[in-house]
Structure formats: structure tokens, C-alpha cells
Length: 142
Image (cartoon, rainbow, N blue to C red; front, side, top):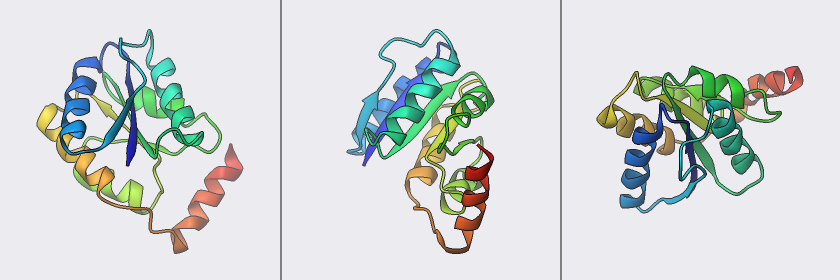
């Protein structure tokens, strides 16, 4: 599985940590910010486009709190990004809401928690079925 990563300066150290973590687990990592992006809008939009254009299967974006990246990327038509800080949301937003990316706030979670969030996100697939109705509704809004 190919994972796109990006961050601004507030999330850069955690992004680097997770990049190494994922590489160690044999994921192919596409690092879109070798240097921190000027703003979380830039880094999150880069992840959204990489996923939507098929350059990556899923995405993970990092900033200080995660909320800004999630909000910015969700402005891109077709994108579904969840701001996650605990494992159940990381899992369920993917399984039930088809999350194409997650946003993690480096000021909220530390490295070990981030590992757990990423494992939950990448360890499950979208269930489809009855959940597709919600995604279709969201798609009509944007």
C-alpha cells in the first residue's frame, strides 16, 4: 500500500517519525513535504490531490492540532479526511466513512499514540454497503 504524507512545521517531526515507522512496516511512503510546508493548507491539499489522483492509496497529514488539515483537505471535491486523536475514530472513520486520509495533530498526540492511530487507519478497509448512502450524501454537498 502506498501512503502519502505531508506536514507543515507544526507536524513535521511527527511526520518524520511516522514515515520511518511506516517504512519499517514495508509500506511505500510518498513524502510530499521533505521540508515543512509553509502552511497546513498546502500540505493537506497536496495529500488530497495525491490520493485522489491515484498517486497514493491513502494519506496522512500532520499539523499542530489536525483540525486545520482535515478542514482544508475536505474542501477538495471527493476527499474524505478525518481528524483523529484516538483509535476507535481512526478505525471507524475508515470502515464506515471511507476516509481517504487522516489528519493527526502533533500537539495532541505523541509518537506512540500516532503509531496506534495509523495502525487502526491502515488496518481496515471501507465496508461499503449501507455506509455508501452517507458518502453519496456528502459528495452531493461539495
